[in-house]
Image (cartoon, rainbow over all chains, first blue to last red; front, side, top):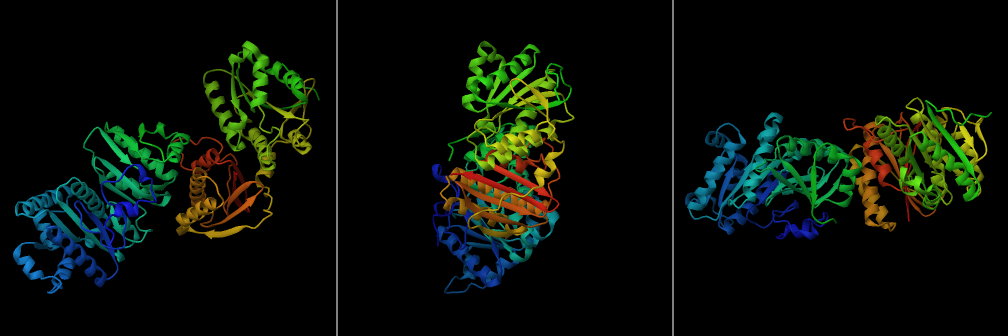
Length: 306
Length: 314
């Protein structure tokens, strides 16, 4: 089981001069439990999901987290766990594991609004820590939310908000599971807002996640994923008059991808936010100059060149 | 047929100047530059280094009024040159000044494939600027050191040709010559060729294949990244505009790593990728970028299909 996913997975990028704070990349197995984990898990069959859910549960319990299982599919997995593996009934009775069906989740947090979701999970995380746990570790199977295109945009916004919440030392961590049969479009949308993704590479070519005070973009972006990048960037929350985008783990970006970044910078600029790009390749800066993208919006490039 | 030299033109005047040796080069160019300065025209000289310095020194204090560009740099890939002239023309015309240029793209020492592209470039200049604002471009050709085929071809690519003593219209010139040149085939590779077919789902695999091959050829990483980017852009063009699929070919040829993309689409505008595309315009950016970043780019297109060949020098 890879524990240091950052070192193992970011070799393809240009992360050499800055070690990412958070583990990120494509994984095959459930990584060792860490604070701020935000893992997207695309699964083909129930057995594979059961196994991954168990790994995630066990890792969280070993860390001293409270586990919150969201969605009937996760609850089914949990209830299949019996001694000697784990005593689900005893864990639930003792408060270390809580469950929530999607219906209950709706009732608890109201209609699916990212901000209300955040408020709900923030309260649950604080409660877990007040109860003596290290944090709240959530396993959520929310395929049904991703299936409806209209709902998906809100789901992507929520996933990004949750990522920021997890990244900022709240004690919250999560595994978000999605069925593979949702199809590549829906899966790519939801996978792209997680630092750690278990999915075929063609599904998750790039990942946007919060890393310290920056937004990181990892993987590769080309013409066929650039529309998705535009949608995901639109979900990024701005909290300052300056936003830093870290491209150190970006392996490839074509002209269409660069134009998306430039248009996003223009949108930010229109809202009085200056975009700073750090860790970009010399080639990307050259493209910016050749294509005269500075005419679209001012962007400051900082950091050492690879 | 003799054309009077001093009548100002309202159209694009594209002229080849044949010279033999330094003195003859200066005897042909100095009057042209001086005349431009006397008329208060913006004079822009794009020459390779030794000739650029020769002309600058000969101009003395007048040189400060002339803008100099190193043709070996801006015209390393001849497909970049029209963009430079277009930008200069636009800048000076909007400032109310007439432009006068000197450009020697086909200078001695250039590789055969580069000279082939210089010929296409010369033809495309007529297509690009005929019918636009009037300006003059004088293209020196070194009769002593260039292959005879190259200087002969200049008679077909320039409506006017001159020496330091004469100025004649070219009987060999016919407008529209770029159409045939843009459609003609490129020489077949002499050595072993790696070939592959790509479709819509293969863009990442195609760019990785090209990067891997370029790396295995020993090209520096910076060149490898440029070729990877070019591969992604060109394969995407094939998928989007070239019939949905294309063929990749890679081989080594005469000190160059060659990567070629072919598909069944047609590039209708032969200036595609040569002029800086306007901001709101979606197409043409990939090829423009490739022209700026790659050592030599050869584009040919007709109703039989499109080929883009990229040469990277070792």
